[in-house]
Image 1 (cartoon, rainbow, N blue to C red):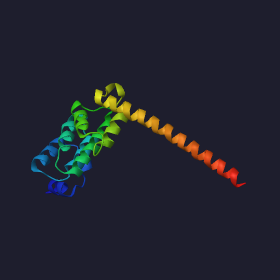
Image 2: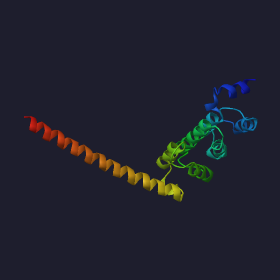
Image 3: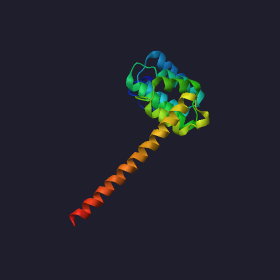
Image 4: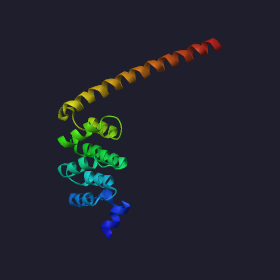
Length: 156
């Protein structure tokens, strides 16, 4: 009864460390599978958690898929790598939407040399865009500072 209550309420699932328990809950169609897969990402080896994260990313519930993407980002943070299946699942989700943060975590915590080609292109895009935005903001700040200085001199 304790295990059934756990899946109904979601309580304690971030501490889940048994992939077989997640598999059984998946087969039963339990709720909170996305939350539980974050627990697997935190407490299990990447190779054990990865196939469950990929399956959770295909759940019909949008919120649960979002938690699965969070689990993928968590796996990237903790392990500094992802499995080919997780890379493929994140690429399929795309850089906008539920996987946006997970892809950002992957680009931040997985070394560039270990990224597959799509992620390398994404890393270059994000880096160049960030550099250009930073430069644009610095120019805008300089123009605003100049305006403020000129306005101050005209008022004197």
